[in-house]
Image (cartoon, rainbow, N blue to C red; front, side, top):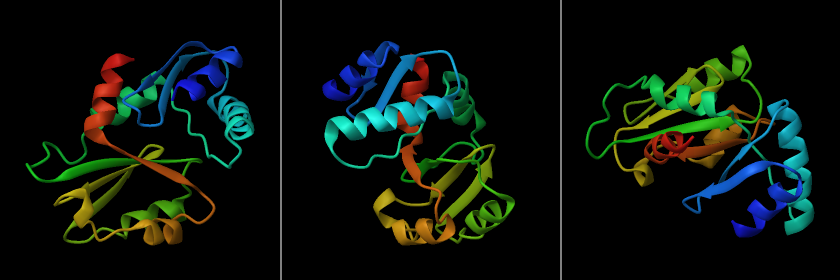
Length: 156
């Protein structure tokens, strides 16, 4: 994470920090998120030597994501994730993703992002990487636990 922070600082971003060794970096900048994604991705790939998809959300977007609470209060033992797609989902992708819902896993698209409730521990999901890749071919995602995102949002 220290090297990733250094890369962003070298790019001229201000107030660069990382959160919980989770791959999440925060920074201040002006401009479009998509422009930042491209610049950061290129610089990090060059530094680390491998492909790395980069997802940028504004502080307001992160706060909105955690405030939505589409499943209400999460029952003990259940897990709420957010999937952040690289690009806004098409109507077809939205329908496909929400159709993945079943008795254990409930999937809802809200705004740009996907809320995923697992009515069990995260390791007991019925939806693995293959299902997500099939539902969203060509649109990479990253998943984050909502507990962690909530704590991150409090820092923004």
